[in-house]
Length: 307
Image 1 (cartoon, rainbow, N blue to C red):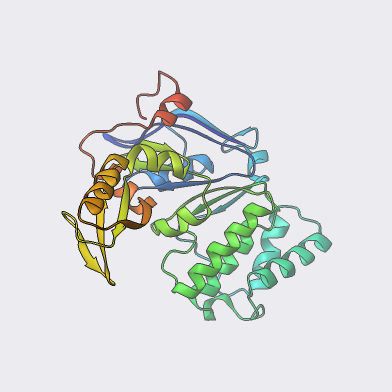
Image 2: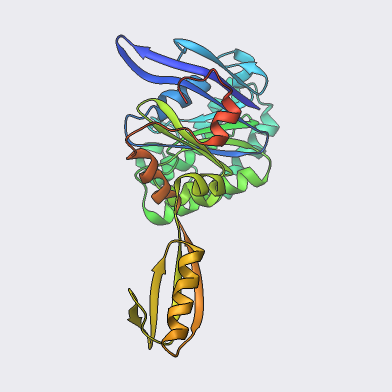
């Protein structure tokens, strides 16, 4: 559904994106994360055809990014999305339905169904009088007015209150369940982790790790074992009437078990904890070297210098 090959974007001597190569399958939710200035927004704008790459290429829904026909299959939501504030939500969405040549009956149905799903009740209020969260919902409805196959969302819940943020993330997840292909960026990595099938981590304009969450955790995260014993053992901490020892390998678990038995006690519980996406992200983003994941290298091939 989406193919990006060696995307590079230069602004004079500054390289905003360097050698980004990735693909997104039909119906997949693909997250792009990274610190400010990593190249996320520039990458999304190249996919949407709003920026021409200096080098490389991208296809969306079988069309070159930027082709007129491609835009009929795409819904794009930028991080900053100015609206026509003198219009109401209804007239604004009808205006964009006309631009996409959506049949009036289909537009009417689609507008009201989408606004109902987004729980936007004040449809005849001028957009300028709406809250930021309500405006964001109107912008999301606009991205869906042409019933696109692919959605590219840049920080869809940026700057919103927690309740509205959670609702928009849940709504995005529902769109994926309906079969939409979604690429989005977000600073809240919990939201990314909750709905993404795969994630690309960018730093300094390059993708430095990519894969599903299990792969990223295995390659860049850590697994710890919390061993609970009935007696004190080396490095244990008393907790709720028993002792907890945190170790990093199964060999260490067995050593703790042996130590407990030698002290006349036993192991009563073992809990495994794995790194969250945020912890993986920090490990990758703060790494001193750019080391692509094995999955990234396999997908990119041997001639992907940016990965």
